[in-house]
Image (cartoon, rainbow, N blue to C red):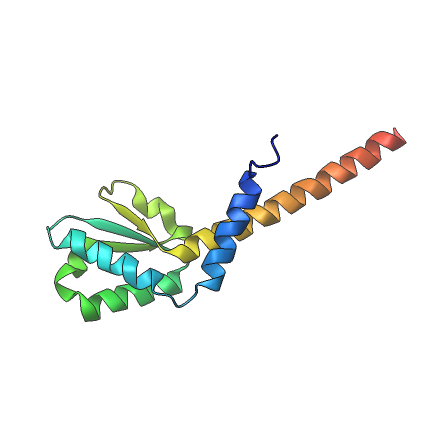
Length: 126
């Protein structure tokens, strides 16, 4: 691998750091505005939130600020993706979803590394 090439791990870490530094910068508001703009054309839009609490919060914001678009925007949690079955339309993903998935990926990578170390230790004993 070339030294200038960034690994996927590094790219994910950089994006996660950016999102964490830019909290309260208007990411969710931008997602909602985008969904409302699509809904203005009477088209269904899907927003993915990082948990059910955030999904409820986003639904509330839509009801307050974009009531006319409410019926055209479906908001679901990343933990309820089975609700996507049968749905169609553009999907917008709130930035916190990325952070949630990055954290889960990091945990899995660490578990994998620990298991690999255990395997190597066992191989040395055998």
